[in-house]
Length: 324
Image (cartoon, rainbow, N blue to C red; front, side, top):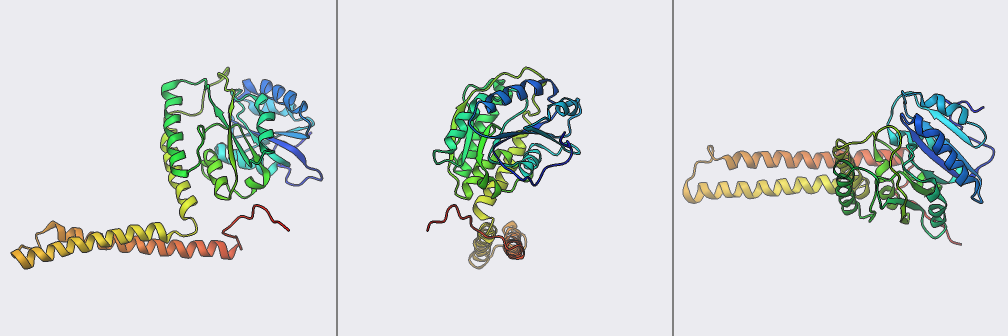
């Protein structure tokens, strides 16, 4: 029996498909999901493994997972609730598959969609994202905020997907190895993968109504998505050149300070206006100070990013293929 708490980081053999399922208080659905998943994977002409990652469950999910860990199935038990992104990262580190499939453990994702998504990977895509076209969730608290968030993410990142929040996705292993997961970035993996040149596709998938438990997400996640989106936009556009974003803001502030100061000086010279009592004089000083701080922050960012890449010998590019 596999030690539940010990990830298997090195194995003598590899498999074709690794299915990773984050688990947080889903004990009532685990048996059905595991049975369905095994039936689908067994019918595929490929070797496979199933990895459950228990993310600090408190409902007894660990006891349900233990007897499931026979040949082909493993479970990782995290010390506490680290979040879905950390759970996916743990499963990825422990996996051995050349193709990685992620899905929820609540039973709403349909394992029958996996063969079709994997087939798309063989047609030139490195990331295939599920689109819950006929989503079985409440409109006001789930579907409406999701539509707004998806449209905003697509506009900011340039990756045209309808459903960034769908956990059911298939990845080429090499692409995921080039992406580092932190915070709550699991929603933006397709956008981060596109940054290294991955071809991202989307397929409509079956979405089923939840039979057990309740959703772990609500309207509060909208704020987290917006904050993460700012981070992703910065990483995609300015991660290797922070002076471009902070320097531009600094120059805009300084330019505004010059115009404000010139207007104050003109009023004093032409009309004898009092400078000390003019609020525009304070605005001029403020804009110069803020502009200088923005430029200084950009320079510090440049030093930090160079230290990061040079000290760890990390390239600023990703080689997709070598010919000849």
